[in-house]
Length: 167
Ligand code: GDP
Ligand code: MG
Image 1 (cartoon, protein in one colour):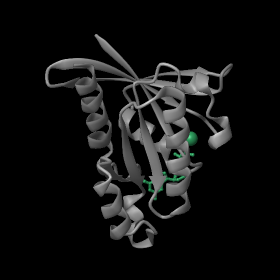
Image 2: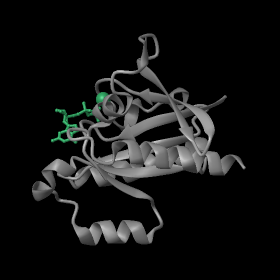
Image 3: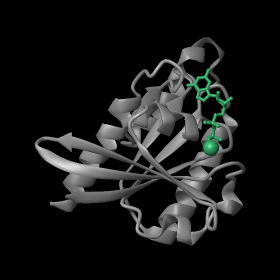
């Protein structure tokens, strides 16, 4: 059994916790690590015949830049960098966070998730910005934790990257 720690990262209120809930649905084991202020969920998936336990780490409450401690990231195999399509500022915050993560744990796989696609008419992230991002060879998924659109796809795509980085 392969186990992979995945961190949820991004500005406050972009939808990290909702994405985990949506992905886990009702089949999950949940553990509150109150001492270190981290919520850890587990989801077992099978990808190309390989069974993987994704161990999802999420910071409850305020989870700005400062609260991302090295201990939160320690041992992470990858991360979901979540931004809110309706707030362009969350892209900048996301970049800063990603930069900090890479300084702390190095070049681990990640996926960029632009969340709240159900509100696409209110999006500040334009197609031009998206194009720019994909030219940087960042894997992007447009998701909605509300409708479920692309949520599973995003997590599975990251899991696939994690498997590939193993071999
Ligand atoms: P976190 O701080 O990143 O963990 O964000 P939360 O998961 O707590 O979500 C923040 C707010 O955004 C909540 O009010 C959610 O209901 C809302 N939200 C999260 N995902 C979506 C989404 O895909 N669509 C819409 N419309 N609202 C969302
Ligand atoms: Mg949260």
